[in-house]
Image (cartoon, rainbow, N blue to C red; front, side):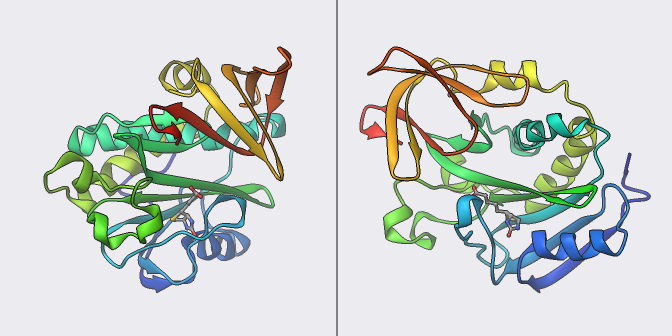
Length: 245
Ligand code: BTN
């Protein structure tokens, strides 16, 4: 397990995407726990082909190279464990009580401030984590302002990116090489028990999220049909007073 004394770190001012850089490094044999951190990304990447805005110096843009000892069928749990580690880290660093939304978004006041993208590279997994720390609402595109936030905007006080980084590396060390995060994840995931809308390509359905199985998939009771559906991929929004968020 990596620790502060031995961890290999590439600290960059600018990079296309820390996930791309970590992938290149993994191909060259990066050790377990190697980390890429950038001040900004020119091609930050989100899930499902989306981009990720990485304002210079406003957040933590980080990717870690993992060489999991988990059996392949449990690799889908890695994003869930990364979400739990990140929730632990922001609690430690600044007292934030983040909500975990399946599979791996973290929310404060109902708005997303963390995104996680886990990708496979041969025998390695690259876990990319973006944490909005210092942005003000006006730093985000207008159409996103109702949906995204930063730690400082949500908490109303100053937060140190260095403190978040240190806490995150510790939490990743503690959480990422085992699959035993599932029970705790399910307890802390606000999606379970919620009314949700599932969007898969052009299709969507409404239901109640009931459970998460051993591969990290979400089981949703379809309100229209009464049947249970297993959701592995797709966008899941949680219903609130304003509709689905
Ligand atoms: C999402 O919610 O869509 C996932 C966003 C993941 C963003 C992080 S920032 C660090 C790492 N590098 C990337 O290009 N993406 C991830």
